[in-house]
Image (cartoon, rainbow, N blue to C red; front, side, top):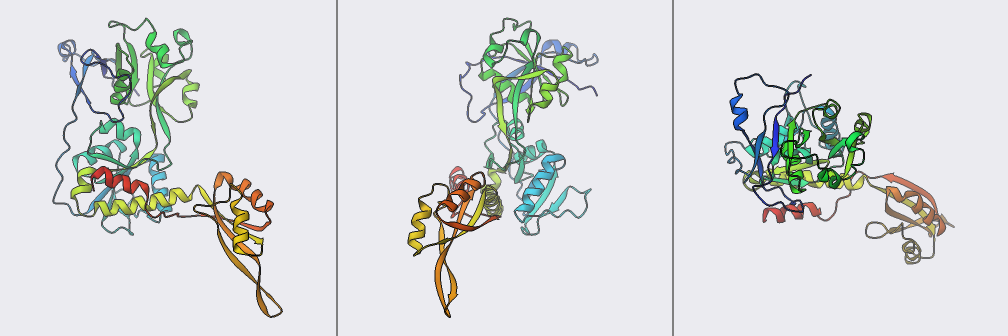
Length: 405
């Protein structure tokens, strides 16, 4: 299937380049046809269109809040692995999504009555957060960055939902003139790139790709936009490099491409995003956001931990506590919980053992069991955890600070 391509030239002469990327994008890309392109507007489109200029302009203000809506709306991915993993995470947080008709784009979460679920394409979730048609959304950080274009109205409430991991990265062919090109600096220093012969980069992330290479000092770059099968473009002679999402890197290797060191544009995973205007002005959004954040944070924290229970002989709880606290892997969240174990002897309840309950990281499980055994622990039980609720999640405090509340 052929892809419609739009070429763009990266013009870096308008402003001096920063040597380091800004932590928050502060400009948007605006494409305008060049005179040459205008002259050919009546001709059929070819694979590569005429060059256009890319300007840095301030981000436009978000659309005003739609005031006549009382229900809170959250956008979820409509299809694919991202959609399945989103629903699975919510179900694990006891927030199952009920969709009466699989052909409909709306659903609800029974435990949160005033929350309306809308299934949308990821990029449309970001667009509708900015337009005020959605209040919350779960979407990859790469999509937030590309289609949000630094809009200050988008607030990342939770930046690590622990699925959808990938990176937006620049890759070039392994062989030919790129055989010894292993870093972004190597690519930038190649003498081939001139105004008449720019580096051609194909991507579906034109905003992030152009911003990244501009900040890295590339002066002669032409961007081609396409939606799929980007790995084929260098082999077909249509581009020298690609900027695409990479998970394992297998697809790149199988198409004779390699990532360059320093060429990662953005690291991404699923995030919970909200509209700043909605958080401030729409009734119920802040409260629902708090509940979602608490549930997500408590569950995600619990998935990395295990509860370990063991019995230990001792003369007192204090003596047992001293032995447990001497071991580095079994100190727990705030410390071990120690309680007496009562046995009946001669008709009386006596204490010879104490039960130790301690939360340990999953990756430290075996070491923790070894340490408990070394100080007299026995009958060790291991239990999975569903939630670990803190006094208050740090992300909630950060959100309130971001909102000035």
